[in-house]
Image 1: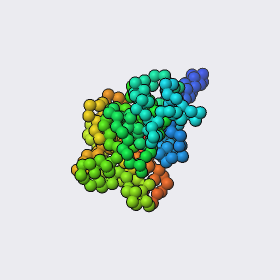
Image 2: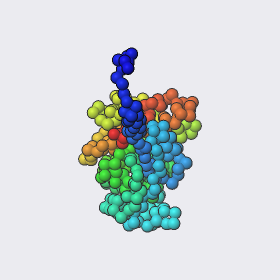
Image 3: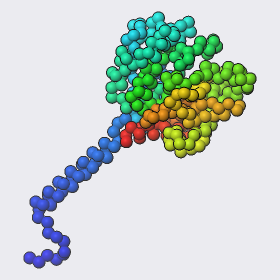
Image 4: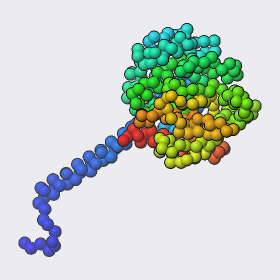
Length: 335
């Protein structure tokens, strides 16, 4: 019988086969697309006070960026003594910092004889949050504590957990991001020089401190909120690759300690702010690693301020800019 069009006749059996192949193709294409969006598990370094905004803000920012935040277990060293609450026993000094003997044991043993492998099971990257001052006994050149009674804020148990975990991330090239105290821990583990108290540092320089990094205690209504300031970003750095900007405006800041310099370390300075003609370090990166970076400021705070519609949200970096480091971390892990 003559057909009235030029369409090629396809037997029914062949048509069914082609339809099945098409369905399979669509199915497997969908599977492949989904596989590029695999769940990325971001471990948040252990801290006991999970009600702290330094923790809850990180959780919110990671979730907003598409990652899965998980609070890591405490990293413990078999060569140190803990009580029934897993708090260090007989390892702290009169102000709660780590004793020099215990600090030396940590530096010598690092993650050997610890539970680090168990803690890191199933974790793609680690974020180190803000918080207490780091015991100065852990510095590459140990120092006495700063002596400012109003600034006594140490947590030796957390210092041990964070120091071991950061050392492990560096050695194993595990993606890690530190914020505020977290950046300082990256610096301490890497052997950088530290400033124990910024106002005292400027006093010793005979210079006025402009309180860019934390509001003055004399202003209690604003003291506990973040101080916004700009940060200059170095070209040819991971930070510049993340932000695609030379200047970051409105960086939320709240700290009284800082990194003095990174001389003779594997770190580079990729962000800074000028404070009365003194260059204050704001971003550091570990060279030769895929994604190990520290920020002295708190982009996660800006994320939450915008999410919650805080009255002063516009004083800080916009939500999209604040999320970039979290998105870059997750995108790197998915590649």
